Image (cartoon, rainbow, N blue to C red; front, side, top):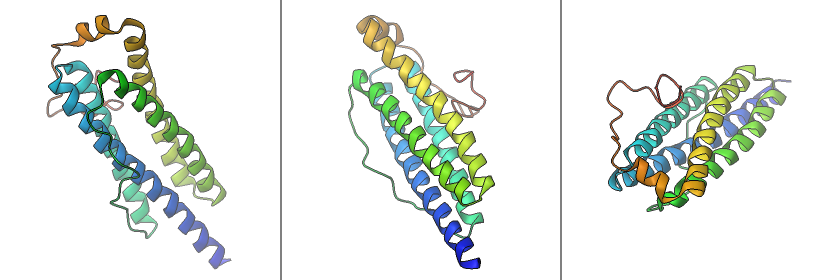
Length: 179
């Protein structure tokens, strides 16, 4: 019985680390996009992408804390390679797909945790999936605006401020952008 429990805990740590690696990739990807969007003078888009990156940082930390609680070692490796210098017309399509894939994968990880009897990790995945859904909705909406309105939409966004300030909490938690 103890061997089964240890094996279950190892499976949970494994999926938590895979999720953490996905969050680390998202952090780097979104911060890279934030810098690019800011350089292109799309401040409003840059600010929201930065806030989403901050949410991803929080998720990465939450996964790491849970891994440590279970006696594991949090990964420092990203799940993939950052795509640099994306045109604004491609970035939000990419991000929508990244978030959609993340939601699908996390639902599988949630089921692994449920099968292993780890209700704490199940709750963690449920909460983070809700945040990822909000990110997906935002990226998908911007993608739709760019597809439908093209340069008109981008011209409306050009020149908007990108300041998120020191007190901003993230896109989903505590910011006007996520409300």
